Image (cartoon, rainbow, N blue to C red; front, side):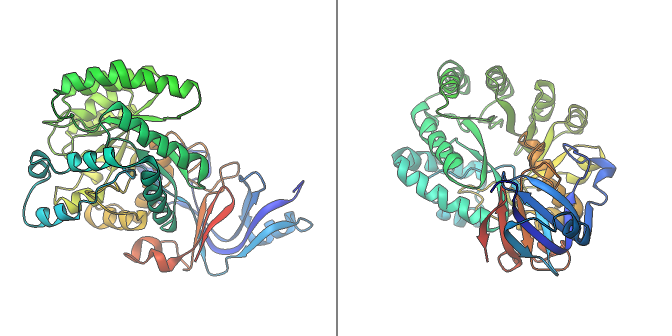
Length: 426
């Protein structure tokens, strides 16, 4: 529509902007309170980008003669940025509900892994599944995430461990990126586990000599777009040396470094990530004090996963220490067959209760900082003029209800909007 505007959200009780000055992330004192407007309206253009935000009467005056394709009355409701899930493994076949019972009975993650379960179980099933089967289940999972308020999600490969199956997973992610309304950041995670019959060093060689050149080629031809490179840096999986080689080779072909580190054992992964210029490191349950300091200096984002520590009964990551030292902290659901959670509101709640984060810290971690972890915070993660119109509307007079009402997000979320288009309405 020439000159017209696409969407008017009017008279909201609260509009949570998160930031207002184009910040790429929030850390330290900037997290004490978020930018919130009371009694405000918001306009999204036909191009899907935010055109105006301000007091309801001022917006009404400014756009008095304008036509809108859609208007939503937000009286008594809150508008928040769409949530960003900075860490998921959503493409796989092979449910692991039986392993949940084993874990409840006392088996550790590594016990199950060494007995051929865990990642290996899912790898077998994913290799057998057709691309169409994987796409269908992936699409359903993304729908669940979206209805829980997620509008940007990081999606990893990593249940292939062979070039052929990793590419099958990346094609599935690419298809979703093109066909669906939710925004996707694609991660190549071929170094998720060491394939049977190989050492970590041999697996690293295969990735560097065969996988990455192929990804570069497919990227050049526009067939598959990959944003990030990931390695599971862990004792008994990929050691620090193999991790360094793989991450550096990924960086050399233009991928952002965004990897699993210091989860089950202290590995000095945080120090390595800071040194390599990693955009983000996930988990960090066992991070060292030196690692925390190095990440703060390098502006390397910590992606914390409260569901994983909770479900695996691990010690919680030291979120408070990271925040107090000025680390950029983001959140992710770690959705995978081992930690089955779609909901960023529940992740934020767990972050507040178990990791002692405040509600403003948790919301920033699930919006602007999670977008920063994916290198997308210049266009997503806050409600500012010029940014993508990704937002949620909740039916409560204060935004904190989204975190406070544990498991209540299905009742609270009235609308999910991506690029200015309503993609879910309760």
